[in-house]
Amino acid sequence: MNLKQNALARIALLTLAAGSLGSTALMAGTLDKTPSPVTEAPEEPFVTGDLTALVQTHFISYGGDVWGIGNSWKDALFHPSMELDFNLGGGFQAYINTWWDVNSLGVTNIGSEIQEIDVNAGFLYKSGDWNWKLGYGAWNYASQTQSVVDFKVSHADTLNPFFAIHGRVDDGFAAAKIPFARGAVGQIGIAPGCPLGPITLSMPVTLSVETKGYHGGDGGFAYASAGLTATIPLTKHVSAIIGATYYHTDAAVIPYNPTENFVMGTAGLTVVF
Image (cartoon, rainbow, N blue to C red; front, side, top):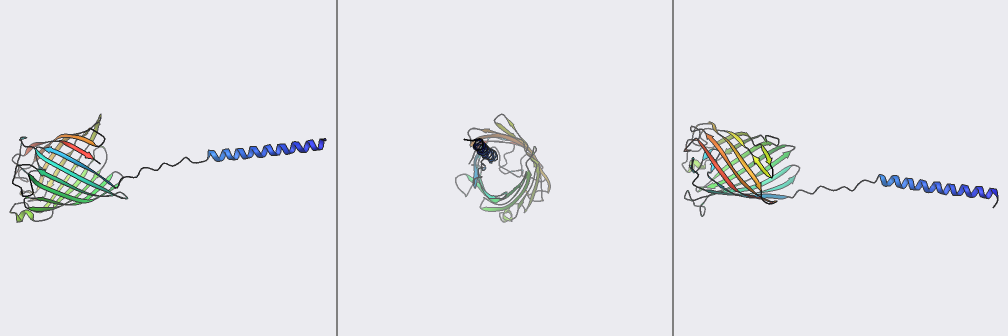
């Protein structure tokens, strides 16, 4: 092989080596820029809910001591409830729930010691930390059905403040010769909570006013309440609840309460699904 051939062979080898290095560098650069696989967030279930069974010392309806318990804790009232929530997307949610009052304190035409069955349905909308709720309720007891509407705005932060309006929109009480009129209850309050190890503490405080005749008395300040409730997880889906709530009511606005000041006790279980 002469000098000219040697030179040509060297040029060919250098060209081949340069091409190989260029291809390797290009491939390495492409691999470095390949995006990581995207893991999609799990979809929220369409239906969620809870089932709760509480034993309480009182049945309190917007400050009214329905069974006239006063300061006695000798009676145990069973209050089961269940709610189903439906995720409609876009921050919207529909709900339906029922609440029962079961005891032997009165004569009932519903069934074995079932004094009242309430059914409520409506919609919720969530935007950031704000929540809006609007619903209708049919409360069934004493051979009648009371129609109510509820509106509530709340904000999720340290104090969890809320504003709510509850309205009685029919004349069922007048037909039953009970001196309760159509009207509204307005409420403002806070419901701060904090963890204590695995236990969650909630400390709701509520101030309530109402229109004249709603509880058969004057209009104005109706009651103030403050409570402390502990939620204790037992399993992933089951928790125990125990708490107490103090009420101060106005005798001129809620005249049938046996005492203006009393404490209601609560204990029970809740299951979420």
